[in-house]
Length: 283
Ligand SMILES: NC(=O)c1ccc[n+]([C@@H]2O[C@H](COP(=O)([O-])OP(=O)(O)OC[C@H]3O[C@@H](n4cnc5c(N)ncnc54)[C@H](O)[C@@H]3O)[C@@H](O)[C@H]2O)c1
Image 1 (cartoon, rainbow, N blue to C red):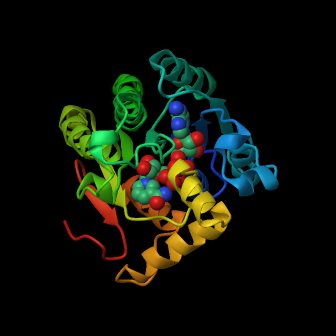
Image 2: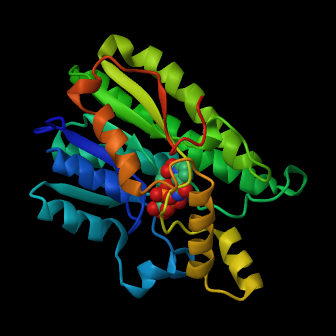
């Protein structure tokens, strides 16, 4: 689907071995794009156990995979909670490739510490979720959008939002607020950038079968005396049974929607928020 030859795509949060960012980077490379990929450097204690066991090297490993597909790849570490690092990242991509055509805002705050009733939510955790899940999406849109406007050849921005952008859960105040905000940002950016031929859309996945690190899942696993991976497998199984299509999403299901939204077939679509959730939610 869609020929992205000659296009350059920047994907944030792309270092996870089983994450949506990696699946998306590989999808866009398969469609012909050259890639710039970014992630934050994380301590081993903050990584999914399988990544440590298999000596996965975040965006450096993904970069090798993109190059194996015959596309160029620029891996750059950046903390998206720091505005200067976002500006430096965008400058590095421009110096390297001379253009950016596609931006995929996929990174999010490492989850788990937010999973408490609103009355127990630490202000610092609230701000961290807003910083990474919302403000960084705004800043990447702003700085990459400026380059796209200057280039004058249109562009595509895709924000990876969530079911939680449309329906909140208990113990999800910071996460849901940060992801609801992404849909407002998507719509406003779509209107601002439409005159420049730049489309902005959101993808709203339900639960995804990733190895994402969750501090909450780790503490629940410890309390139950099982490994994090066993606990995670139970959650994936239960959530699959609760989903009309009988399973939760794979990272590739989300990447496929992104692949469509950046293709020529999606030329006339902007400001929308598409669910990829197996029938969990209809609006
Ligand atoms: N996994 C799910 O079940 C699920 C469900 C719905 C929506 N989503 C959304 O899909 C997207 C991808 O989810 P995932 O589970 O693949 O990813 P994830 O939870 O592993 O996080 C994505 C990436 O963001 C990076 N990140 C964290 N803090 C950062 C920082 N300060 N600066 C830069 N990068 C930082 C992480 O290192 C990670 O590689 C996210 O936007 C998430 O909200 C995920």
